[in-house]
Length: 204
Length: 94
Image 1 (cartoon, each protein chain N blue to C red):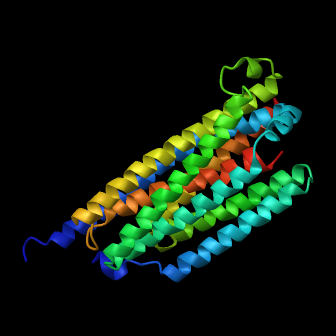
Image 2 (cartoon, one colour):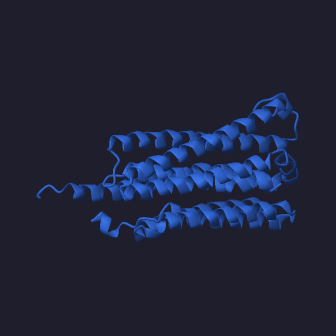
Image 3 (cartoon, helix red, strand yellow):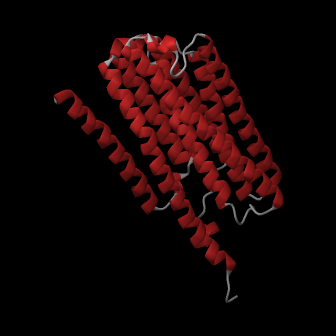
């Protein structure tokens, strides 16, 4: 008992989790900067932002919000299942989470392609002829939702790696830091959307 | 060791949290449907903040983490709010 594996595990997981949180702090300021730009321009170009925001489909936004909230619960459930040693449930809930993330992206695809049809995309002639405030709104809309969608994709990859690792047994009821940190990342994706959704889709 | 202190969220509590979050989303959508001007913005942001607080404490498990992590998260969030407030003060009074 001189070498006690659980002892090292204890230190690893605590610091490993702290490291993840610190990374999430940097993510907060990455998106925070964009939120700040959005807020200032919204104050400056209020009528234009109001007009442009009405172009967005609040229904798709709401559906995507529900997808992300449910997926946040399923990933938290996957962690609970793993801690209880229920591998089957962990895999099931992880798969559901990845599927919900996929549905989110499908929705995003339809939402964006609908805008593209109207010629609303970064650098388009339609956009260039819009009032300055509306141009800024759509620029920020694509930047913020695009960066968020990128995070959704990264989250999907991370969760898929977890599925493989749980199947292989390298993530198990004793060692689940990777799953825990991936879940934290996924919750951050949800958190950002919680603010993006009302700011872009609801407040018109 | 870890397992002695480690709190495992129950499925039931996770579902409860989800129901609350979905209810808040519904309220947010309904309220912003009524155009109340600046009040709408304030209410939407307030509801979003409540949702974020719930996700962080429950789903992200912060409620059951050690004091250091709680302080770190609160500190960073405070810093973030300060950055926003100070920028707006600068913007409105320049």
